[in-house]
Amino acid sequence: MLRALVSSDPDPSRKQQRMTGSFDDVRFLTVAEVAEMMRVSKMTVYRMVHAGELPAIRFGRSFRVPESAVAEMLRGGVADVG
View 1 (spheres, rainbow, N blue to C red):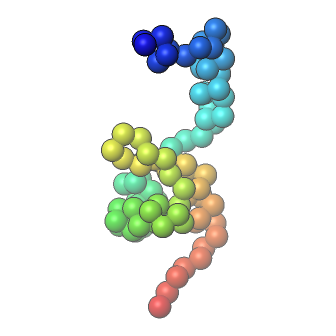
View 2: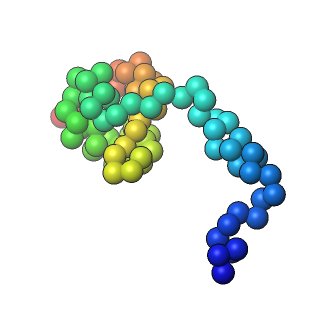
């Protein structure tokens, strides 16, 4: 039964390559860092993440936002008023 839980891939280095290959150049920011950069509250950042307006990944109990997504949003300069 334990054998079923263990990866059947005979080359464990391939798994490591898949896991780290695409995130080498990505910098992730905390919600507090994003809020400071955008000059909004942390709650606003959480709302944007939950609404799908700002991409994020879940890391334990917190979220991390790619720095490139924040830069792209700031470049867009779109403001939703009234």
